[in-house]
Image (cartoon, rainbow, N blue to C red; front, side, top):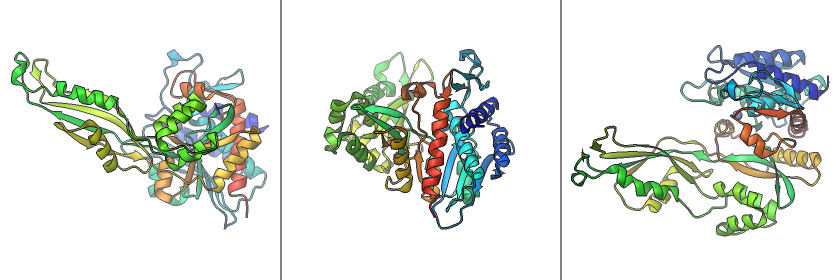
Length: 433
Ligand SMILES: [Zn+2]
């Protein structure tokens, strides 16, 4: 069977196993992968904190001395409402050269491609210098409460997942900027750092507004101010490298957006959220009685910090923007915000693959605005982790629309391209003695 057919059939099998999280039930996928990999002689173990939620880790041991590489992926998916779909979300139907079903893009396609890459290398007798590892983990989509996926592996089974380099989800989109072709590769992510703004007033009976100090009304101008938030642009290393690659020079931070817009509006869209922290007020609560004027109004704000930016720094910027007032600002949590160097053999492997797959095309470093499991590897082991799964056939815009939505599907051509990339990365990064 060709690798193309092999990855197609494996993905169809994975989609047919419902691993919607919650509850996940990822052990089903781990067992399918174990059986598949076992047939090619790849050593696997299932590591589970809860029996129904196993992680699979497979390994081609290195001969020693070389860098190690991890193919990281997750086997859980978000839910699907069959009523919205053209085909059954767990049918794994093959139609018009595409595999359909929940998880095809996020991210059972990459799970299958990673498994086929390591299995095919094993069959060919590939002997890496450093370990080549494949981890298909549970619970990426929820990841709250008791940890059963990658964070648990990092703390309880660090030897299973500690590598020098890792390839994960997060990017791989093909974009045309200023007439040239680029493939995005994420090397860093923003920190998800929501906060609560509590606006204070004085309660009173709603029939006599003048006797109270309405916290909800006082919150209104602050919310408008949050919505209009602008900060001085900062050019972080990823963005400098991106602008250098696309435009041949690095403009001053304050001119970056305008210059990008001149070159291509798509470029401006791409970099705008990466120039500053961003704020989006999303939840509000005040009085819970119609006839009581609230003494307190709480506004929850989704906030994304630049990689490396601290909450203290951000708080100064936000307070300066809002000005004096009767409010408190309280951080709720902080997730992610880590980066990896772009100066690495893994970057060279991505760049090499891109120019081979499409002559003239270049890889472009990008910071993702969302959280990925790459963060755990960077934080625990200093792993150089990138998000890259090349998509050439499906347009990036369509893929973005289908992820977590109805009629999710992936072209077989892109699955095959992904297998080729992962095999290339293994040979380039951990193949050399
Ligand atoms: Zn995902």
